[in-house]
Image 1 (cartoon, rainbow, N blue to C red):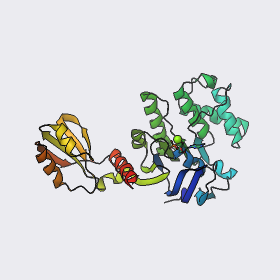
Image 2 (image 1 turned 90 degrees about the vertical axis):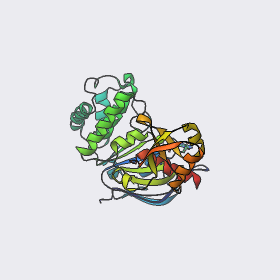
Image 3 (image 1 turned 60 degrees about the horizontal axis):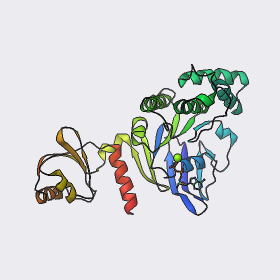
Image 4 (image 1 turned 135 degrees about the vertical axis):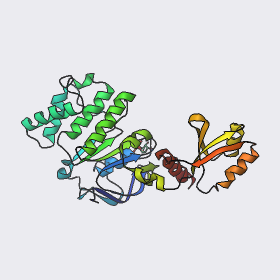
Length: 306
Ligand SMILES: Nc1ncnc2c1ncn2[C@@H]1O[C@H](COP(=O)(O)OP(=O)(O)O)[C@@H](O)[C@H]1O
Ligand SMILES: [Mg+2]
């Protein structure tokens, strides 16, 4: 595995508030998702990796460069789509994207040519001469992506790339991200608090909560891990059964099947005991396919319990 990013014991505080709490990660080639609730520290961690914020302790490398050095050579190899709006008012699409291309060292001519290419690629061909102030929030996300791609970086950071998008625009953006990762073979780190977005795009997942990386998952490994998730069918009063299992996540699925996630230390036979106490019958019972949500809920639950 080629080492793209490595962080060791990274800490960072805003004043007295500890936003990043001893983070250690190793990131290789491919597409990584940084998943976590709002306020988990995803944006702060990205800014530290990119050299915008200096960690109070710890060390790290990105593409072989020290994160504290804030190197220009390193920045030329990186594309960044920040969470906030970062468009220059009054400019049209082509002018903005080519200007940012020039800032990353391209000649004017080359930058203009690339601007047209990337604007076409992100689906803004028809609006490329419009003032960016008039863009919808979905178009703004797309042009931010174009500005991050203009210099053909090795590594792309996407901070909440689907924020403010309606479902169709969101799916198109996720397809674009998949395309960049697979066809362009670009390394990507994408943050999101939206679990399905991460699930649809990322093969490797880092789960973040309260400034800590609390879990690392590979989508392909989820089912080999034991998460105590079952599908059951019940006859009787489901409400009473639920009350007997206050620490379990129970979701209603299709055709009267419930999906139930038991805590990891919960012995499976106890569920039959609880059913008996609730006076319900279990008519069907089997281990269920594990989803990223199961892993996420388990990781957050365990982190909060500690
Ligand atoms: N400039 C700042 N000053 C003080 N606190 C901040 C600042 N930026 C972020 N925070 C706090 O740090 C925590 C992590 O924020 P952030 O990295 O933006 O999380 P996320 O991107 O996961 O939503 C939050 O509690 C947030 O309120
Ligand atoms: Mg954020």
